[in-house]
Length: 193
Image 1 (cartoon, one colour):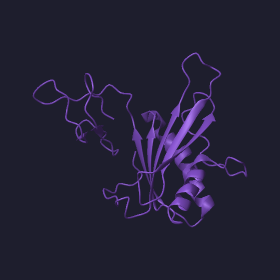
Image 2 (tube, rainbow, N blue to C red; image 1 turned 45 degrees about the vertical axis):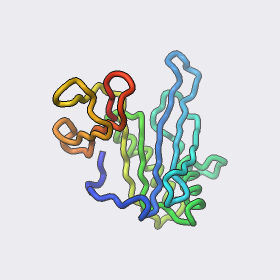
Image 3 (cartoon, rainbow, N blue to C red; image 1 turned 90 degrees about the vertical axis):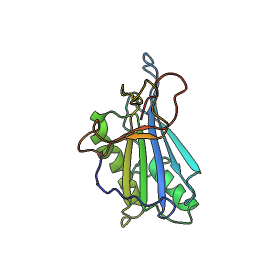
């Protein structure tokens, strides 16, 4: 999933940058009356990247796309992302983020375009609503853990070491994708993201 093919990314402490994590949790199978829960966290108090704020909203059950990141109508709830942008601005010395890095969990490959067309569009609208001349750079990273890919050492059945990145040969030929084995497995085979 790449809108821009630039290998360079400035350090988040050099350029005002907000880091955003997003996911939706759904009720258990058989619970037809339980709404889904959309959760978004974002960094605040730039240039620190260790302080975060969380926003949680309910939405229609079993809907994976977050539908309330931005709301144009005057409402108590003006949208999750607009709320987080205002918090970043007020906690970061009245600076708007020039770079917005989004980590999105829980979407399948068939939903990548929906993330761009629905969620990213709402986030861009929230930015333009706050300042129509504001045009931050967006980086979207979709983290997928629900797959059956596993990696082993070349000479044995052991797990690959923590921090291993696989970004060639088995990856998509056109998308900027990779596998990351971030940590050691507690039991059994580690599953990369």
